[in-house]
Image 1 (cartoon, one colour):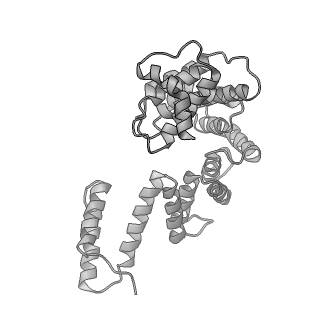
Image 2 (image 1 turned 90 degrees about the vertical axis):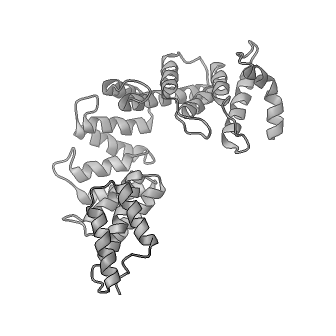
Image 3 (image 1 turned 30 degrees about the vertical axis):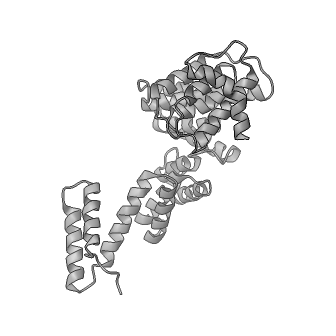
Length: 330
């Protein structure tokens, strides 16, 4: 299959290698095959040099194959092996997609162009919000996110609610934000970050008369069902500290931090290390042996030193490597 595809597009790769543009008779079928080959090169570890992939995708998109544009956005954002992020290129390409008038297509092609356009609007909003590849402009971010929302993109609706919740690029309106998130909960429960935002608003009482912590816990649990790392981390924080209506449960908090960390949440990774270390220290405070007292004292000293967390962890690892560590309580 792979060799057949490569043979089919070898005529397309020759002008690419010479730095030329595609020929006028470059057909839509050629564009589809070129995109397919580019995806294989990105996904197959056998291809170590993928430097030609961005140009392949660009040529496929220029011939009207919209899915190549989506892949190109991912490539420019550095989501694929062997290719560094190109923020300026990503921003320019997204802007060109938004500015272009979609061709008069029907069926799958029309749906693909619509998906590309709403995704470009969504990503332009995130670029403008963060100042990634372009000047930071919260108002422009809000405008782009509002347009993506008007096209019906669920994740754009969630982020627009966040903008209204925090007042990013607009006047803060947490009541409207909460109503939109609750509506989205009914219509598109798989939306990324949805339950994280709902849980946060309930916990803080944003858009409400007063905080509703139990409702926040409920939303965070729903988020965990949808693999929301932020929701898992926040629920872990609630269980670690405890509240007026929830009991402390450090063991459950550890499990949640570990889960959120495995899903890529960096804050959860830091929380996991901190709580694990604190648990080890607390577990050794009642030990009576001289070695255990020394270990506890040394680790408390390390914690109190004016060092960065990285240096503290390095010192603690050295102590543990020397077998100077507190033992568990009997």
